[in-house]
Amino acid sequence: MTEEISTHNLLVQLKHGNEHAFDLIYKRHARQFFHYALSQKLTPEEAEDAVEETFDRLLICISNYSEVICGGEHWLWSMCRHKVTDTLRRRKKQALQLLESYPSSEEANPEIYFEKQEDLQTLKRAWEKISEADRQAIRQGRGRGPGRKAYHEAMQRMSAAFSEEENRR
Image (tube, rainbow, N blue to C red; front, side, top):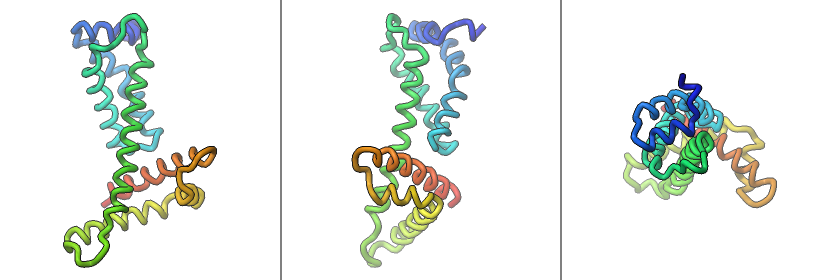
């Protein structure tokens, strides 16, 4: 019976207070969103968080859902893609902050210094895991044109390798 009801109709029902509609939407889409997040190089933990954030966002935004436009699945997938992209950006920002916060001298707090050293070792192991072509694309920077896509793809792989190494610590 759940396959007979369109996602659009379930969203309309949820908008009007039918909490059971949320359960049906979740069962229908959560696994697909999770696999999409994994395909974008998120770790399983990050993918779970992205799915959870997507459904949290759904509950926040459901009152704005347009019953006339009939966005349905497209509207949900848009939310999911945004959450995955946010996670990737957050991961990249954390890696850049880590590099920028490297202690400039050994006079820094020893505890912080050794923690940063561990983080840098993790970053180094992640760097060694990616291909030479990815390293080259990252060294060249974002730029414009065809190199821009290569840079972003290389940064995604670097971020995934960093997260993987971080989880091993």
